[in-house]
Image 1: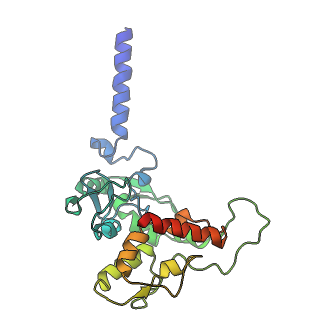
Image 2: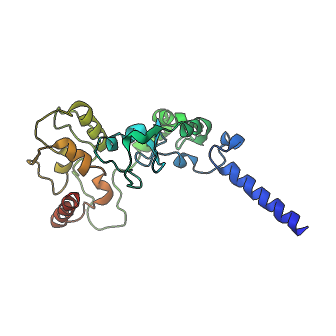
Image 3: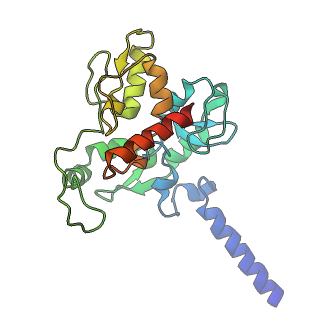
Amino acid sequence: MMAMFRSFVSASTQLRQQQQQPGSGSGSLAAPVENIESQFSCPICLEVYHKPVSIASCAHTFCGECLQPCLQVTSPLCPLCRVPFDPKKVERSSNVEKQLASYKAPCRGCSKKVALVKMRSHIASCSKVQEQIANCPKFIPVVPTSQPIPSNIPNRSTFVCPFCGARNLDQQELVKHCMDNHRNDPNKVVCPVCSAMPWGDPSYKSSNFLQHLLHRHKFSYDTFVDYSIDEEAALQAALALSLAEN
């Protein structure tokens, strides 16, 4: 009797685990797991995959467009695990595409169940999401502070192309724009990303701006830099980054 009970419990557990795995047979349409949208989000843009591709060597998946800047360098590294990979062995992830079409998740604004493959377009047109974005505060101190809330903060989110003056480009868009339109431009230009930083020199012109973009600006400074530090500490951080590159 005890053996039969253990067998029943084991079978029930296995069935529950199978139902919770993405793409597991008939359970895929029901999307039983929680936070399923986050399970199918690109590690770079943090949105639901768009035209997903996978790196063969490590099997990590990204949006095709998000991975493009990494494919432009001589020896690319996976943005997630930093393992070297062969750009020729990056393939379209048809399995993930099928799962995106099968699974549904609630919209973060209106809570309507939407197929993951249509989530991006739905969010872009969802009035509830747009309302949330409009009401999002621009600055909230992490902890209570007696210091005044800063004003006139330099724009370090979007930049102007130093070649043609195209505006409102975020860091990834700036890289893609310059690779697509100014790959063979010989002009020396000032890096708009560096010049916006506390240690930036607005008069320094990079001799090879595209290589500078691809190597120096693989990540966002906002992720690692605390702008409350003084200028000396900021200069030390910039020096350390330069030494690491060399």
